[in-house]
Length: 530
Image (cartoon, rainbow, N blue to C red; front, side, top):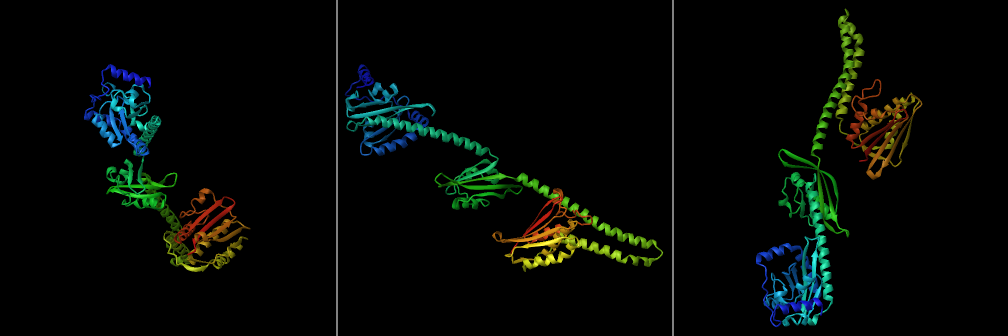
């Protein structure tokens, strides 16, 4: 018999306890005190219950009772065999009573807490004879990292089922409970940090479980959507008009969506513009856990961009007006001058001598206005099925005579697989003639212009490239080439490339340019085949 058990029996004898009669426990908690103690030990009791059920399942078929006490020996909870519960209840042993040596005699709970070590008392080692058929085991615990709480966990069974491994089983159970509680603390702290970060982010955050039920809805999401967190948490996300379908795609097909621009109106005078991202949440095994979405508020940026665009529009209108006025003023000044000369002359018929000059200036004005209207609003393309190789070669023949005057050669490199495309031949020819004309005029003499065309079947498009070895442009000039009335030519008006750009845009195509001063310029036009 262990010495501390013998010492306990001696103390019981000295106190006058009758070994043949188990006295009713006198120390017990009130209902309120028991409730408070259970509340303090809530997390420990929850985790202990989980492991107790596993142990009892492992020991099924034999009667066992697991008891949890606090640091002073008061029973907080017990699990196990109902018959054993009923038996010890008749002896006054139940939740709220204290496992005290003075009234209950030698018992494992009092000794384990007193000695702070695992204790087992088997059969006749008990002081009271009515416990001679019982085997009891107890391990104390002290969870310093979990509110500094202490207590003990015991197992009671019959002597015939005694095994020394029960102490090791209880010790492992205490270690497992401590690890689980530490994990709870870590998760709790992580959740606190997550909540702090989520709730104070300048982004709206919405999270759902794998069924699309909202589990997180931060303060900024409330502001953006005009919905209250309490009212939406626990409800499906799919009914949200603006972004519910994106959550469905993420959860159903695991599709990630990024930079979706959404405009959410929370009231008549409040509009929020956001960039929306949503992605499925998967664990390491690739199993779907839910979906995460964020809203990045770009309202201020959009408002500023609108202001800038409006400012640029007014600036562009001013430049257009100034350019048009300048180009019209020159021929108009000449015409007015002719009329003034005629009115000052004694020969009224002299005006007829200026007729051809006046007509030329008027035609110039008419052409200018026509070009301006075409640039501002070119007519819709009249698409036809055109054989591109033949069309390009005809355009080159049309421009050959002008190129020859400058000893310049126009060379063709046309993809043989490029056959038919749906284009407006008149408009596209106007673009190519303009680009070839610019290339010819940029060359002083003995130049080469390369016109290439290739098929881009992957994108259902084709490309036309016109490259020259003329004077080229600076970066500043290149940035302005499509601006109306900008020109690098001495006598140019600056509408040609603007018209080209609008024609290509109306064809759902693109036109880009690269240039190096002194080395030449390259234009690339991309058009759809259909």
